[in-house]
Length: 190
Image 1 (cartoon, one colour):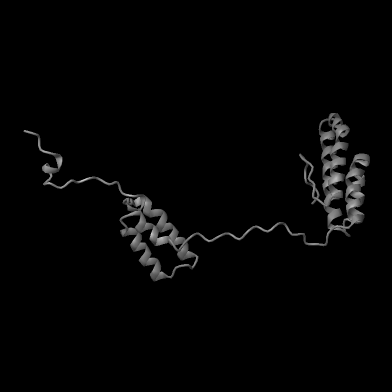
Image 2 (cartoon, helix red, strand yellow):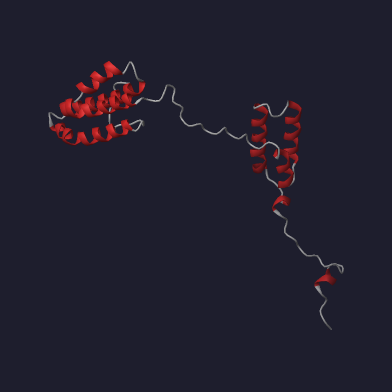
């Protein structure tokens, strides 16, 4: 005699197990908390009124499956941040003369240390913001070199031998209507 089949053991019904889909999985308290936080944020931003907030919190606390929970916040996608605008220049574009004076402030620093950038800052800095920014940067660089030389009892003077490279690079950048910042410089003048 053949042994009884598994279907016969269960009353003749063949019961097969089907795994639930992701939306049919039951939710835990830990999964409810972020939804409630999102509802609180939406209420604070004014996207939900008080009654709707209460209703949705109640629905979140009694939700059984992930799809029930997702339906509560489906229309509350986080607000899209406005796109960042590129930095806008407040004044007019620098003229050719302004770019030449800014480049001269950097080049003069290689020849006269801090004196040339200081003179250009005082004479042309009031007329043009572009010249003032570059002259202040050149002056800060030269003052930093001077302070390093004083603190190291003259050994920092070796830096002056290569500082002309940085000054030449800064002068070229100033001619192209771009900002320039010397590395490792104390910003004493703004």
